[in-house]
Image (cartoon, rainbow, N blue to C red; front, side):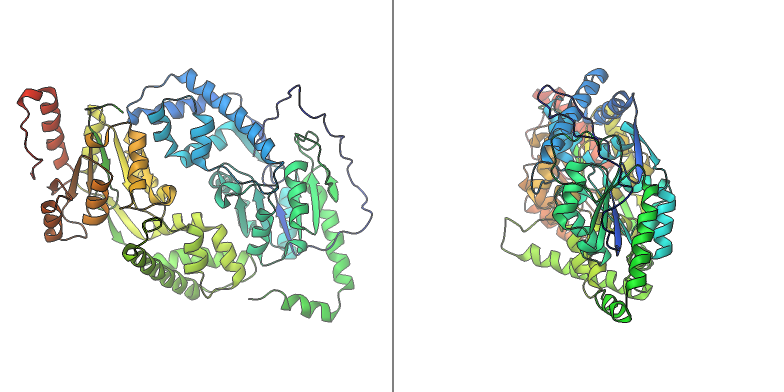
Length: 577
């Protein structure tokens, strides 16, 4: 990923240029796997001069559904300032023994958009992952480094598993770039700091990648381009060899670094000869006993103006289950298993998904009935879902790889589990609200907020929506207060002025009321029966029962009329249409 270095008066003097190690004092140990950094090794980046202006245009457009009109140049200034401060933070983090990664929300809220008004900033921060994915390709152009294709082909021929280990604001964007370049098929695992919560030089990133490939760190070569992050991380993790492929940041570390690499190369192409030498030398010396031992080691706030929050499933979208769900996602797991060298068949993968999903549902039921308010509504960590629940009974290296690929698998499952279609009246409601200047947000329990956004984009209403709180991104699912409060914070509207539409008596009715939302509407035709919905209305857990999302339009028209003529407003409780 791109890092901007700033030359300050207090900066440490530049480190001496590393000499290219054409000859190595001792042969490097033969690797069982190669772990590669992304930027500076697999790809080179070229900064785009107009990035701030282009990204500011995205932010300004994204703020409009929040009811905010931002100044384009002010946003661009904030983005440039935030990126400069973020670069300083990253340099400082490289001095820490075990640095954590900033969350996408922190990067957007505390750095990139810190100068924006509070409700707008917090509302946009709910879509931090989307903004950072856009930023990754807006800031820089990405091109394969010389010799990368040949190096990856050599590893494929030699059956050397490959992994990516990279600090990233958007691992999702990095994955897409690799796919666009046709390189993703070579990598068994991809470990990105934003997905695992730690960043290099934390040794845990290399250890996670090694675990996912079924090898030990000392059996790997780690290839990077920086001293303060890559070389230090490799040494701390105990990698068998640490290699540098020189890039523009190599000879300008932010501070002196004591650790040195085993090998310094100008391009990844130079790694092919040392790799061949190490592998061929090891093969010549290895005895039958050594071969058997190696096999044994690799086991199988605008007051008074209304705002609207909507649930997604059952309110905006009606879904038809896809009977091929387990087979489609199982094929992805089979592919991962083959790339890491621990293959399983499609039947095993499909059975694991079906069993894991049932364990997930049982876990949710147990949580819902538990007397533990502090953790009762926590959303499941994707790594737990895929590595522990789905992965139960699978080979341990594959379970480790599933943990690393968890966000991508959750997205794949979201895409495959059903066929979505707009609920009649939902898109009409969203577009009517946009035309009236009423901000509409989302509060949804889901395994993939990214998947929901894809659906909304296909419907053509994503650009019409304001703050969207998804349980997998917030970490709390309905009826927990925190997920409602996240969306409310982005609205900047008093909770009593918010109208919420859901379809479940507990998650939406009680959850919305507990969060202080002024008007809670429940839709008929969902999973809960009409009797259950009527009981929720009678018990005060809902204010209205609706037959269609579009029924809310009439209620909002009446509300706006009463608000404009307060003397004529009846002092009665909200009614059921």
